[in-house]
Image (tube, rainbow, N blue to C red; front, side, top):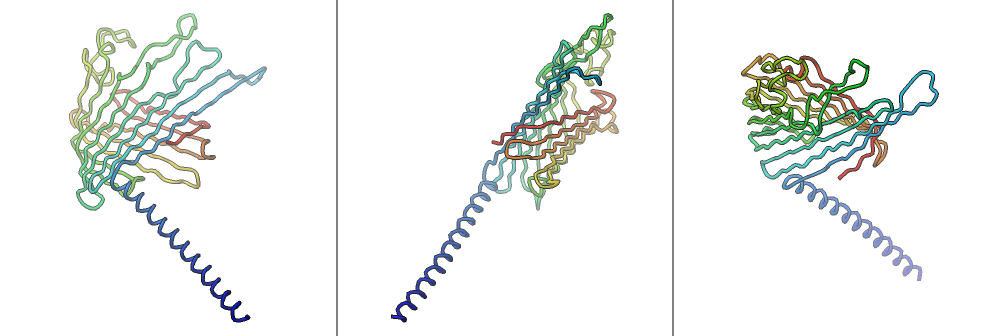
Length: 316
């Protein structure tokens, strides 16, 4: 009897060990299959992801001796990537859009805090290693009319229309060479890049609405009198770098440089964007966006934009 119990005990242990090994092998095989599937999707097809964010800010004062004004602002943003990869061909696309408004208690107008629409696309065919022959396209404009604010002789706030959708609109495109180690670091050089600046001829005809004098060639985003477009040919370089600063904190950097061969090539146009996301949980985060632009055809100085707030994020 004792031998029978001993034999049953050994068989039970062997069965348990075998079951463990089988379960372990199954888990390993499943993991390998999932990894293989993901690799196949990433290497041989489309991969899309995006984030919709809503930033809100509100201030309220009541008998506040230090002063202040009630205000409310909100900014809606979209950051969407849809990329293709198969064999030696890659095609990366990104849509960036944001729009924000500020309303204060003692003003007649709602004012924009953000207004951006941008599309980036780069098609690459592997040349050697991590280098690709490339063709890129960048398009930028805004959604709604932009104003310059001031006061009339009676101290009443007034506004003057300055820009609107497709005025200006920028289209930059050309062939080049592209380097990418992974999706977090991408560099593109395009030595023969065409840049088109589009405007409404209402801004370039007759009397300059800002100075009250006859329009002078190039005063509105470099476009000549009565024209609706400016063409440039030059050298373009772009860098995209995304890094994890710490746990749940990521920074996305984009730098675009452009030099016009046809006019003042030493005046390099610069467009730098930084987007930092400090994740709180699946839906909440603190978002910081900064953008700096230098383009002497638009403004002879540095333009900067900064937005910071608590965001509600939805991934898709």
